[in-house]
Amino acid sequence: MQIFNTMTRQKEEFVPQKEGEYRIYVCGPTVYNYIHIGNARPMIVFDTLRRYLEYCGNKVYYVSNITDIDDKLIKKGQEEGTSMQEVARKFEAEYIRDSDGLNVKAPTVRPRATEHIGEIIHIVKDLVDSGHAYVARNGDVYFRVKSDPGYGKLSHLNLDDLESGNRELRSRMDDDLKEDPADFAVWKAAKPGEPYWESPWGHGRPGWHIECSAMARKHLGKTIDLHAGGQDLIFPHHENEIAQSECANGCTFSRYWMHNGFLNINNEKMSKSANNFFTVREIADKYGYEPIRYFMLTAGYRMPLNYTVELIESCKNSLERMYTCRDNLDFAIEHAHGTDTALVEKCEDARKKFKAAMDDDLNTPDALAAIFDLVKDINTLSDASDKATLETAAKTFDELTGVLGLLYNRKKTDSIPAEVTALVEERAAAKKAKDWGRADAIRAQLTEMGWSVTDTAQGPKLAKL
Ligand code: AMP
Ligand code: ZN
Image (cartoon, rainbow, N blue to C red; front, side):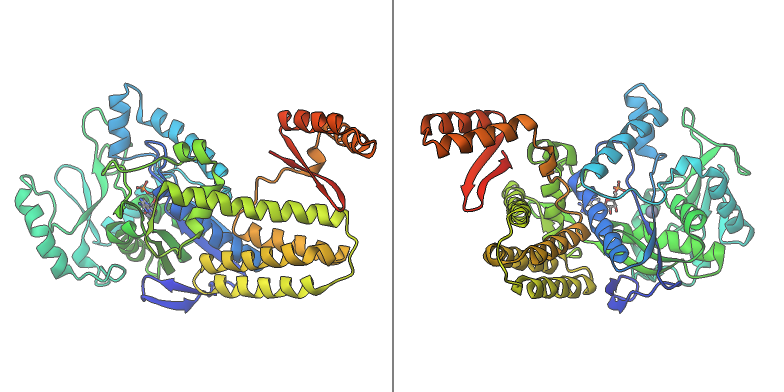
C-alpha cells in the first residue's frame, strides 16, 4: 500500500517496522464540548485505514488519546461552576457515543492525558537534564527549539521564518519568560484556582504537545509506524511532538505521517472558534450517523471537503441503494432458481478495483465506485444466478462495505416478528382466493406496523419502512 507521507511530501510504500504489525497514533479530541463534523473526519478516515490494514491480514495497534486537561476545559469548568474533570468525563462519554454511532472501532488504547502525568514528568525531566528544555523563573518549563537541529522538518518551516513570525508576538509579550519566542511550554506552572500536579518544578500541569509524546512512547514504543491527525496539527503540534520525542528518545519518532484535509463550510474551515460548526450529534439526529461516515469517504482524505445538507441527503440516498441491493441479494439467495455464474467474475473484478483504490493512498471515492459497479452487476445478474454465486456476491459485498465501515445498520430478516410473517401468509392466501379487499387491508395493516410488502415472481418480499 502506498500512502502520502507528510514528512517527505510524496507517496511511499507503507512498510511497518515489524512485518504484519502497524503501530498507529491518532491525536484525539479535547473533550470540552460535543465533537463537530470536522473532528469526525480524522476519526473516520484513519479508522478506515485501520480496517483496511486489518483486512489485508495485519495486526494494528491503534492508540487515540483523550485530551482532558487544557485551558478550554479549565475555563468551561469555571463557567459552569463544576470541575474540569467533570466536564471532561461528560464530553468524553459523548465523544465515545458519537464514535460508536459512526462505527469507528474502539482504539486498542484510549489513554487520558491526566492518567499519564508520571510519564509526562519523566520526559520533561529527561529534556531538562539533556539541555533540550529549561525552567523559567515562574516554574514553566520550555523546550529549547534552537537545541534541535531537525526542528521544522515536518512543516518544512525554518527557524528564521518562525523568528520573523514571532517577532510581533515577542513585542507583545510584557513578561518574556522564554529564551526564544519559538520555544514552547512542556510544563506550565499552575495559576491560582487551576488544577495542578506536584512536579520537580513546583505545582503545575502539562503543556499541550507533551501528552502525545508521553502516551505514544508508553503505549506504542519509542518509534511508531504512523502518526496521524488533521492538517491543522502539522504545526505546531506535530512538529513539537517530534522535537520532544526525538530529543528525549534519540531515535525517529514516527516513520510516516498522514494528515487529512479540512472539512469546510462555505469553503471555510469548520471550527469551534469560528463558530461555523455543526456537531455530529445534531446531524446524526436528523439524518442518522451513517450518512456522515459515507460523506467523509466520498472525497480523497487529503482534499478539502465542503459540507452541505444536499450532500448529506445524497449520501443517505446512495446508502439506501446499497441497502436495497443487499436486501435483494438475501431474498434472491432464499429463492435462487438460476444457473448463471457470471457474477462470480464480477465480484473478483470489484475486489481488485477496490484494493487497487485503497492501495493508492486510501482512495475511498474510487473504492466506493468499485462497490457501485458491483451493485449494478448484482442488480442485473442475480435473477439468473445460482445459489452459490449469489452467496459469493453477498460475501464480497459484505467484505468490501465492511472495510469502509458501512452497512452496519442492516435489519436482520430473522428479526421479522411472527405476527408480521403470519399476516404475509394470510395476505397470500387472500390473494389466491381473489379476496382483494382483504389483501389490501392486510397490506395497510403491515404498513402501519412499519413493513412494506412487494409481490415478486419468487413470492412476496418484505422490507422495513
Ligand atoms: P481538536 O479537538 O481541535 O484537537 O481536534 C481533534 C481532531 O480534529 C484533530 O485531528 C484536528 O486536526 C481535527 N479537525 C479539527 N477541525 C477540523 C476540520 N474542520 N476538518 C478536518 N479535521 C479537523
Ligand atoms: Zn497529539
